[in-house]
Length: 228
Image 1 (cartoon, rainbow, N blue to C red):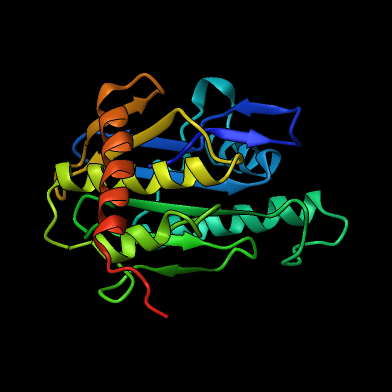
Image 2 (cartoon, rainbow, N blue to C red):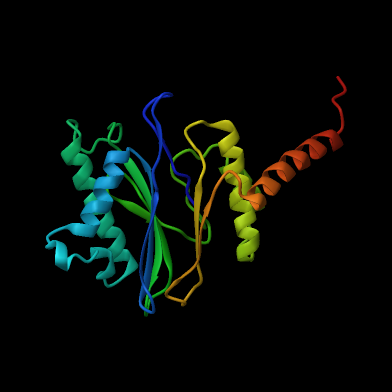
């Protein structure tokens, strides 16, 4: 799941998609989510889509990689190249042009894999100890996922958890905003399952938001009062 808000100050807020999906039904699904400098993230996606091909022959490079590991290497190399080209300081970690990415998916004949790709172009892979990644503004929503996540969760429960996590972030940070984009992929299906954009008037999201606020208040009231 990703939000869609970008900003260059309080008077310059826009909506841009931060989740990109490449799908070849029966063969592979690749999902790339981004956070950071908008020009950098758009350049990375454009290069992955268009490099070294005539318009009539364009086919994303991500549809030709032999494994998810090689896909992560490809994205990392492009990220590093774009940042080094854009920034007068090169690919330093404090560059204004920095961006980070989450890459996930499955290629037929291999296992699903999930990576977090850093601005320097290197990356790490999810594991039993680190089963999920977040990029961008994480400090408000991450504690909720850490407390409630269970690897046996259904898709429906996972959607509920993600919405609670994002709702907490939306209420705490103006740099994160609706609509939200959500994609579900089921192992070995090799095609996108659910793909949904969640707007402010989404009835289920409003139910989750109001219900979470009410539940927090009730939980707080149920705690014993301090006795000094």
